[in-house]
Every structure is written in structure tokens, then in C-alpha cells.
Length: 113
Length: 116
Image (cartoon, rainbow over all chains, first blue to last red; front, top):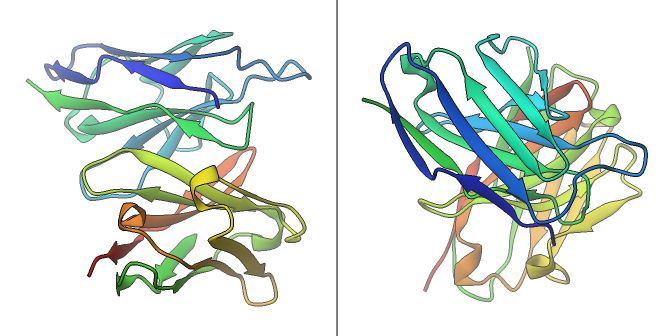
């Protein structure tokens, strides 16, 4: 199974400041057709997860452009250019290249300083 | 507007069974891969199972193989998860989720508690 490792596991950021979350996979997430199936999700307290980004860097509909995804192979990053209060919660990376099973990272908890 | 509404959770004894349902609306259900993802109390997300659009292909995480069964009824826009031989470590909120490349929808989840 592909192991997804996120860092840091918690993050405290001031409003308006940038934030960055790293996700590393135990093997390359490049599929045989060249696509990389790496997604990012956000789960606000008490809510269900919401996908923010798919295929490394494509934002889902309605996701603010202050969220951006990058990376390749085994190293990926989610960046928030300016943290807002609504960003509080837990961020998860997820791989859909080598499945089953689909695997998630442990999650990174974001709080406001 | 898209809705995914899970039901069927509750308290069950170890070794017992439960059948979860997920009612979908607002999107072309039969075109979507559907998944069950669970979250144990205070823990992260764990993918459990998924099924393709016509129900012909199903996958499971190893820990539930032989105990859980996923199915769907496209005529009624319903997704199911039949859970047998439940264990304490199956205790979690179970979310249903629907996916195509450009869209990903989640329900609010239903809590399953396995305890004597």
C-alpha cells in the first residue's frame, strides 16, 4: 500500500499570512498514462471533507485561488497564500494512483494564531 | 443542488450487522464512482470501499474484505454498505462520496458504534 506522509501535523498561522503543507508518498504517484492522481481535501470542524484540488494542481469549482497545489513524483505541496478564518480545520492529501487501497495522509491541523 | 444523505448507522454489538444507505440527488448518479470513507473518533480519513457506475466493479480495503459488501441501485439513486461481523475498530462516522474527474461530493456521514 502507498503510504502518504504529511508535514507538519499541525500549523498555527496568523490571519493573512501564508501556509504550506507537505505530502510525501512512499512511491511515485505518476500513473502509466502520465497522470498524477494526488488530491487535497479540507475538513472543517464538525463537517464532512471537501475536495480542494485534484491531479496535483487543479482547483475544484468554487475553491478560492489562494489555494494552490504543486509537486511531482513523490513530493507534493498545498499552499495557502493568505490564511483566512474559514481555513481552520484539517487538510488531507490522498492518492488515487495505486489502488486499491486509496490512501490518505494523516492530516494537518490548521489553527489561527 | 447536490445532496448525499447517509442513514442506517447506530449502536451494534460486536459480531453484529448493519446496512448503511446513501441517498443521492442533484447529479447524474449512475455516472459516478461511489465510495464509502470512514473516520474513527478523533482520527483521520480511511477509504473503505468503492463501486463503479454500473455496479460491476467493487473494491475494498483489506480490513473489511469478506465482511462488508458495497452495492448500488441506480434506479433509485441509492448506495449501500452491508456490514457484517462488526468489530470495535469499525466504530466510525461513515461518509458516502461520489466522484468523477471534475466533481467530488460528500455526505454528512452516519455514525456506527460497535460496542457491547
